[in-house]
Image (tube, rainbow, N blue to C red):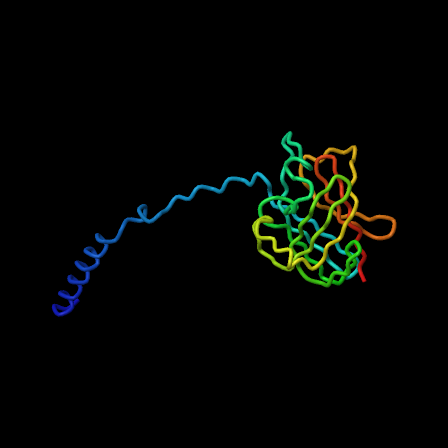
Length: 187
């Protein structure tokens, strides 16, 4: 190092150590974030492929926890988000007959109005809602009514599933001792 380079080198070292002393230490920059609590009603997914069609339902699955469900926690005659937390959403990749309704391919919010012997199933065009609190009936694109039935099987968790029936397939809602099945046929 020449005698001309030495002052620049020394000045650079002084500047570096002065600058370093002013910076916060690495531990001061670390922010501790607690892990999120598990959801009381975890997210769930039900799906089925029927021919070229794919149907997917994303919902939150509440638990019974020794509560009276239909007619209690979920009142009869009132719109229900059909699960917990965010509104349930269903996607159809092809046009289908959903109960008595011709439903075009797309994604819909799915709400229900439970009753003691039948349920009204609502498909709504608005997505991304929290629960049913902002449900706008003007945006319901389909309303169908299907029977409900009491079963011998106890379902602790609210569950949406698919099954084959004699003439096609069904989307099944089951919780406590109640079951509702919506027929599905792919065009």
